Amino acid sequence: MGAQLRVYKRRIKSVTATKKITKAMEMIAASRVVKAQRKVAASTPYATELTRAVTAVGTGSNTQHPLTTEAETATRSAVLLLTSDRGLAGAFNSNAIKAAEQLTARLEAEGKEIDVYIVGRRGLAHYNFRERKVMESWSGFTDEPTYADAKKVAVPLIEAIEKDTADGGVDELHIVYTEFVSMMTQTAVDSRLLPLSLDEVAEEQSSKDEILPLYDFEPSAEDVLDALLPRYVESRIYNALLQSAASKHAATRRAMKSATDNAGDLITSLSRLANAARQAEITQEISEIVGGSAALADATAGSDR
Amino acid sequence: MAAELHVELVAADRSVWSGEATLVVARTTSGDIGVMPGHQPLLGVLESGPVTIRTSDGGTVVAAVHGGFISFADNKLSLLAEIAELSDEIDVQRAERALERAKSDADAFAERRADVRLRAVAAR
Image (cartoon, rainbow over all chains, first blue to last red; front, side, top):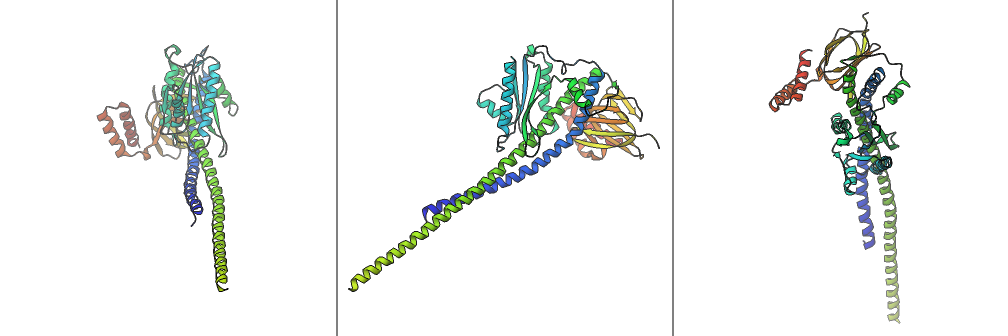
């Protein structure tokens, strides 16, 4: 076998092995998307009931709460960025990071200081590499987040917002995550989680629901709100984590699918080149044999004379 | 037919139980409360403790609920909990072991959780 043919054969073998791996990763990601979607669906009843309850308290009483009161001039904001622990997901992480950068720039233009909180090793690596300050970060659960994880993330954020801005607290909390629109579309979005505008929640609710009854609060509206709002924030963060996980798996699936397709194309073109190389080798061998025998015949004919 | 109310018991990551009931007893921060059909709209904070649901076919469902809310309106009762388990789902031996461990570690939260589980099983 000629040297060139051997090189082609070796590359075909290595690309075939890579293709098998990406194909397997594609199928794993596809099954995980379904699982993650199911988890999003399973968490919906809790979220809807909680939203109903928050609306009920918000509209049924004039209670003031640090989580719902807007600071007159917000001077510091917290940004929670949700990324994944692992890459190989196309532009998933860079899109989320870009959305966070845009939001940060916008908030800074409004004259606010930014505290960054990050979920996922990828986002953390991005910020560490640029030597930017990260208040707190979490990782290790982005593929399958549980409610306990969401709680872990929510605790320092709620603490920060309840603290006075002068003592290092924040006035606002923004969250940047990747919304799972469909299997093919995932968009990085940012939304303001806190301070919660109860009117907005109520509007969202009333557009699809009946008028809320006048509730009797047990023990009191303040206490209910006190207990309810942190849960509401946790549930929103949980939902964002789940959507982000589903989006990540969908992005991985798509990236791995195109990697598999590209590997297939590469194998086809390499096989063509290998075939051409083999054919050229054969042609050369034949012409060498023909040329050799012709020369031999000429030599024999000469000696006869 | 006796009046009924619709009950939804949901945990943060799943819906635990739903169905028709005639009476629901739960523990709020200000004491035990029993809700029957036609109760006035109510929104309360739950203590962790067992919740007893008397179903319309005469059966009883007991669940261990760890923190959460109870809300009742229009004959629909929602029990929201971060963690909720039906008493049939609770592994008694595991809960007992957890209780032992929590006692030796002096972990008040874990002890309370295990205690609530065991009481839910006992109330079954």
